[in-house]
Picture (cartoon, rainbow, N blue to C red):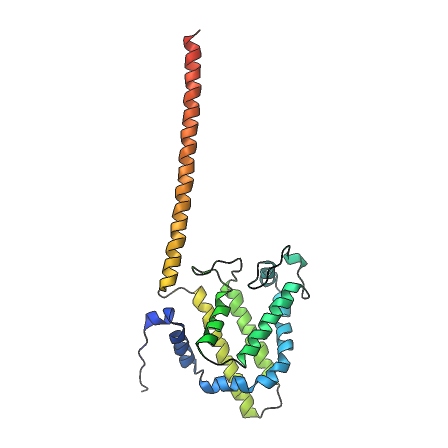
Length: 249
């Protein structure tokens, strides 16, 4: 029997490095896999444009995924966009393609440290509305999961056709990419699936949101109360006027 590791459940939801270490360790995504990703850089660089185009052609295939590009984009601000006017050649799509290109280039060049983990975590975070981030973009997880599966399939498919590597190297690199995409998928899922504890920042954000809602309700009740007083005053005035006229006839 292998030795059993002890895992702190709460830390999985509050400590990014700890969460990554657990998921990567479980999957078997190791430093060797990271090195293999870097080793693939020269070949992958030539595949990136094809991969990026394939991803956005797929997103265009469905209105439910394409409509998100009519919303405000992280790092991109343009007015007057409408989903019916956005096509593959639109400025916002060019911007998003550039972001995906940078993501793929980072994957094969970035040093694996907490700074890079925070970047991968940010990639998951920007697509959601959470207690720590309210934005116009909130892509439902079903689409994120489908897209991650498609990206993995496209990348792996492209790598399997590379003839510059021997069979063993190609197998190991493809396997490393497959593991990586599961790690990245978890850093999306953590913002969609709330099954653990909240961090202190999340608790404060939730409390602030709840207090704002309570203040909104109080304001509505105050306005309703003032309206009722005004209506009652007006009704009293009308009754009084009729009474006055009755006494003088």
